[in-house]
Image 1 (cartoon, rainbow, N blue to C red):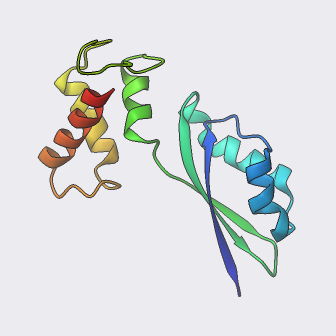
Image 2 (cartoon, rainbow, N blue to C red; image 1 turned 90 degrees about the horizontal axis):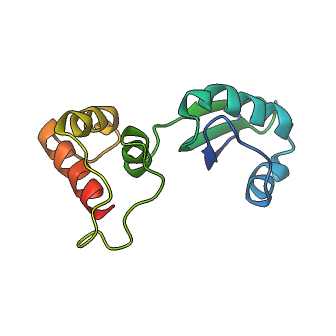
Length: 133
């Protein structure tokens, strides 16, 4: 039983065929519409954010499984403070403020995916990302 793992970055709930996706899924000869429907179904809670998705395909039986990750920290920050774009000069122009409670919430969501050994380290990492935005 041979399995292929394809990593994709899609818009939450709005995945559609594009050349990059066709190039990755096309050679496996699976039904891309079924894959996209399943991805959209599983990522609709992340509407408006980029979400990492892993598609595991059994090359013999053409069955597939979709595993959805959590969005990147920057996407979670943008969503938490309802911001469209970061500052062009983060050291001089501040575009928004984020509370420590929001930072802790994001750190708890991403702690498993981060290389942080504690919640304190994860919070510091989120603060660093917010500072660079």
